[in-house]
Structures are given as structure tokens and as C-alpha cells.
Image (cartoon, rainbow, N blue to C red; front, side):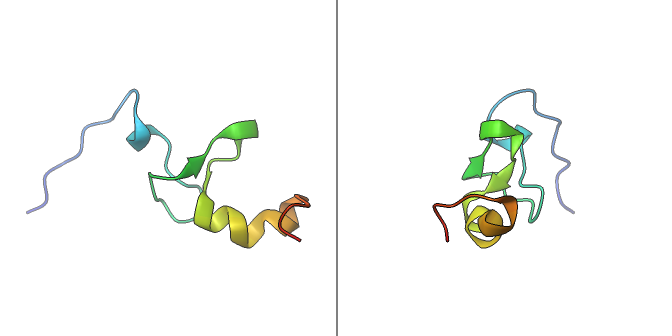
Length: 52
């Protein structure tokens, strides 16, 4: 039986990635809330030019 995780108020576990649910490496700037791996995949669609 898995232990139930309590709801965190601060720390890395409070902001999971919107796309895959990872809690580490999350980019919160501009309210993105995507992990760095997902960000690389969808940055072009979002209009970021660095990843062209």
C-alpha cells in the first residue's frame, strides 16, 4: 500500500509540470509550470525563439 502524500504548501512538490507531472526542473517563470524537458519540446509552439 502506497503512503498518502500530504498537500505541500511550499517546496518543489507544490508545482508539478502541467504536461507530465514531474516536480523537479519546473520552469515557473511567466507562470509556465512546465518541466525543462517538456519545455524544450513545446517551446517553439509557445513562441520562444531560443529553441528554434
